[in-house]
Image (cartoon, rainbow, N blue to C red; front, side):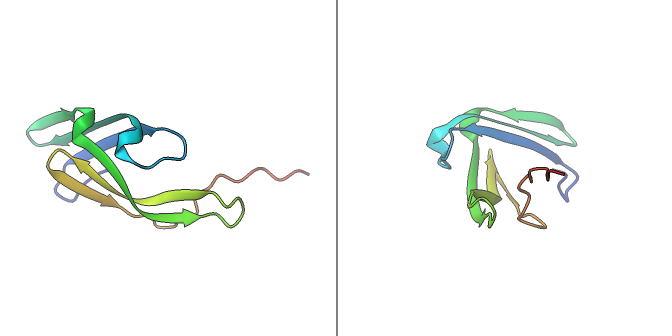
Length: 93
């Protein structure tokens, strides 16, 4: 994400199926680029916390759609413009 202060964050986490806890993360990574350069963070320094979920009316699947992301001593929050981003199956003709 591009941040208002001119920095840029790349962060991701691989987690076990149907879990949201940090303890269940298989791997986490983040890099933060600012004017002084790029800093990478160890998995222990990266945490994702869902702060809002959305449930699909089509599949009843529950998705985390807003996240609080802790990277080192900084905290970022993401919120979707529209929560329904579930892939749709192509219609048969």
